[in-house]
Length: 221
Image (tube, rainbow, N blue to C red; front, side):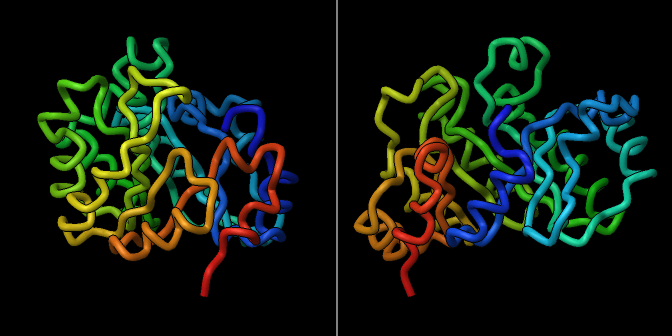
């Protein structure tokens, strides 16, 4: 989360039970240009397990950035953000606008893998309800070989006041991929239900901002 998931916050969440953390989303174009502010956002200065979250669609930017990237001790891989609903990013064809760009996302994942790094995806159910009903998110999951898929169970048009649609997770699990639930997860009862469906894990975002102890409270054996 922008301006939230810095190193100190990630370490706090890890100490409170989070298994994996994520950096703020950064634009690969800026990383490829060597912009200091963006490079600082992806620094992992300690051993807290973290994935670096990226937004971008140009293969050349990924190649240029990865050619000089040196992983640190806590680095666990990259996460492609295909879920950001920001109108600015969507106008640029990135963030949630990339949910239907299976071929390009597949190319990006392969570039990252070729450089020796794991890559996960974070995605929404589509830009809008039409894309959701078409199963755009399922098409992405089925056709990409990522380490796991964090599925935010809303469309990009929806906001945090709209309830997350947990009914989509059974179809996601049926793809045979490792699925992580995201959106409106606040109780251990929900965690148990998601586990019964067959989900690999749960991602907590907004609920952890003021209550990082939530990871410890929701953890089950």
